[in-house]
Length: 255
Length: 353
Image (tube, rainbow over the protein chains, first blue to last red):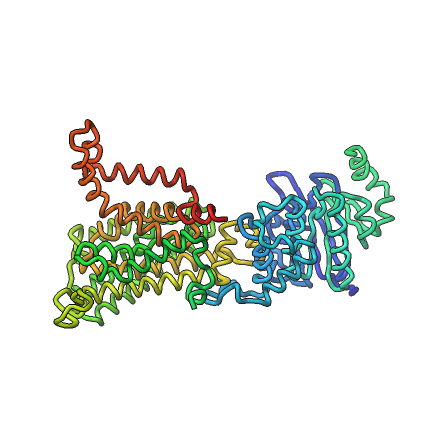
């Protein structure tokens, strides 16, 4: 762990009309840490992710990657700089094979996309990498299936495999286990644990399940109505009064 | 060898492979198998349209871009060759200069349209191409001092490629090999090569990104692909190939005019051929173009015979009158879209899966 943050947001804000969905969030993430971002529905967690990975333009504030301002860079540039994103609502290439979905990510990482006359199926290093990523999420057996035909849980795994193939510096998981069956969840959690164990990868995780958060996270950041309301060690944050009221109270009543 | 030529993207499916092979062989041997001026004309037109339709499929089927300017690029190629031959005098150098000028103009136009409008929504791009193509068509008919206006331009080509030239005084394999036959084989070879080049492009990393953009451009961006760059490149490449097809068309006809290469009815024909053949598979272009142009040229003959055969039956001869051929072409189209929504290729591949 180093002290200089690999990723930082400074007063990051986005307004839709008069409503600030993310409102002045300042937060720094150190290399090799896993930070869970929690908060009730509509707190702005996914919007915050979109501001960092570039799907939405910030109204105000800054995003810094390794000290460099990336606030104005478009999403593809940020992806190539190492900001990896697995989406909450599954976001795949539906009529391409599972394998091709991941191979495209490996190809993007290798910067080989503009090659016009080489055969894609002859680029074996990309294929090998794609297969390795599929094996890590236990999807190698479905490689030929069209992404659209996978059951929901497998689509979520594929989403994660795509991010693995990008080999990012920042892994952003947006509720990776939502909608997964009980026996599928450990595959993803183990995977996140293993990425974390590599030591140099920075992980941001939006997650609702408190037991997951408690077992994985080094730190918890709580968003509420677009604002950062708590930030610290998991045990301390979960115990704090503001969180009990703002988030856990809501979660408890949600069941 | 075949795998290498076809970039590992074989037709797949026995019926489909057979049909594609049959068309290619028939086209290759057309001067021997189907002698006669008219038959050779149809065969040459099929070759040119396979290239034209395949290059359009690069946009529509592979990248998911709807463009109405494809005939504009086809026309630019044809006008390039025609104008250069008229102005600079008959010769290979005139053909080369015309072709290079046409390719440059097409690339510049496609690049401008792409950079200007491919960032935004698909419908906007379609509208811009429609506007530019209309403007170009009007321009072509107004600038009659250059383009010959509505009458078009008739020009001469090097004598080796004309019917007057004989390779030998004796027929070979029962066929007189004239300059016309040589030109046909030239058209065939260039078309086949362009098709193979396109097949390679769609199976290259570049082509895979195009398909990714068609499937989910938002996701492609999140992977790090600059979709504007890919869309614009696809549109420029497609325009260049359409330009080459246009040059071949003009060379074959020794004539070019707005109705031959620029008109919107050709744009509609291209769309129909892509859809009938099957979008997103270049082999669809082979089958779609062949079927459509055969119908266009021989349906009337067939109907004449059918009308004669049904003389005496009420109503039928009227319906089968050769003047109704467009009606039947329309019926064929509706039926094929209804029963083969994924085109002939999609259908044939689906059956054997």
